[in-house]
Image 1: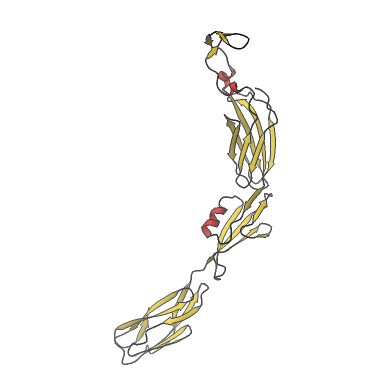
Image 2: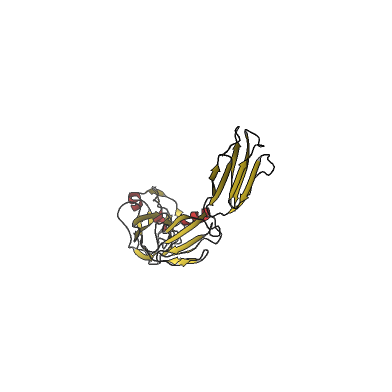
Length: 295
C-alpha cells in the first residue's frame, strides 16, 4: 500500500456534529477497483502503440486477495460522549454525523488500506475540540418552534412554566449553566462540555371562574360570588332585567337574586360572570314553591 501524504482535510461542525473528510487521491487509481481476470499482454512500440494485440489470464493481484484499496478513517470521541466510528470509502471524500457536545475531543486517523486484510498505509492524524456556534430562537417564536429548535442539540434543555401574567405568556428566557442570560435571536458559542443551555417557555395559565353561593335566606334570596383564576380579573355580570317577580342586583363580583309571589313557578333563567379572559354561566331555578337554587 502506498504511503499517504499529510495533505488531509478535516472539518467538524460542532452545532450538528457533521464531520467531513478529504484524503489525498491514491497515487495508483487502478488499485481502487478489483483487478480484472484478463491481463493485457499486447506487443507495443516505444510510443505505447499496440503492434500485436494479445491478452491472457491474470494469475495474481493483491486486489483479488484483499479487495480494492479504500480510503479509511478511525474516529474517536471523548468527553461528555464516548464513541468510535470507522469510515471506509470508495472516494477520497466522506462524511459522518457524530454525537458530540461542546468541549468533546475528536481524534481522526486517516489512511489507505485494502478492503480486507491488515495491509494499510501510514496514518495521518487530526485532533479537533468541539465548539458550537448557533443562533438562538428569535423573539416571538412559538412554543413549537422553540421546542423543535431545542431538540436539535444534546446540550439544550427545554421546559415550560405556567404564568398568570398575560404579558409574560408566550415568551421565553435563555440561560446557561453558569447563570448567564442570553437574548432571543443572539449568537452563542459554547466550547466547554460542562456548559448547557436552558430555555424556559412561559404558557398562559388556564382562565377559570368559580361561582359559589355566599348567602341564602329561606331559599327566597340567593347571593352568588364569582372568583376568577388564572391571572384574570372580574369584569361584569350578564343577567335578565325583565323577569316578573325576580329582583337581581349585581355588586362587583357578587350578585343578589330574590324572588317574590309574582314569579313564575317551575321556571329558570341564567346569569353569566365575565372576567378579562373568560366567562361562566349558571342556571337559576325557581321551584313550584317559589324558592331559588342554581347549578
